[in-house]
Amino acid sequence: MNNAIRYYHSPVGWLQLVATDNAISEVSFVSEAGESVGSSAVLDLCQQQLEGYFDGTLTQFSVPLRLEGTPFQKRVWEALQTIPFGATWSYSELAQRVGNAKACRAVGGANHRNPIAILVPCHRVIGASGALTGYAGGLERKQSLLAHEQRTQ
Image 1 (cartoon, rainbow, N blue to C red):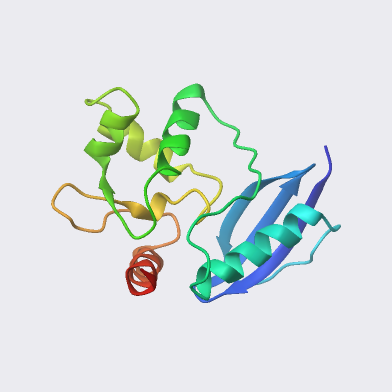
Image 2 (image 1 turned 90 degrees about the vertical axis):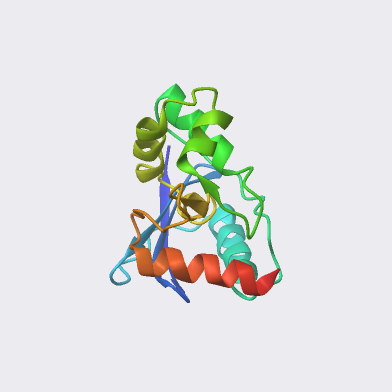
């Protein structure tokens, strides 16, 4: 398994893109660009799709993903990918969608550990009151991503 790493300067800051073999294994927010390592067609595709997302021409990603986590985390991350572009779900709605309405905290934990920001849209999960709650990239980024999706619809 060889990792290729690229840095992409998005409208919400620097993103570190990591590809493992033929799939994206990480998209994370970083404070500055590091040194890119290797090259990969899937990294090219990921960057192209992120550019399309940010310029408003793409609303659904098709980049192959490699999500590594517990079975419960994977169920949560798969459910996140079904939240429509521009929509939001509450943590309790997400818990219901993964089959355990009482698992709001566990869903929040899985959401927080999502290794693939934006493509696995954990920014679309909000509090039951409609308030923005925790986001690994920071609430300002979460607000920016949600506002972008609302404008693009």
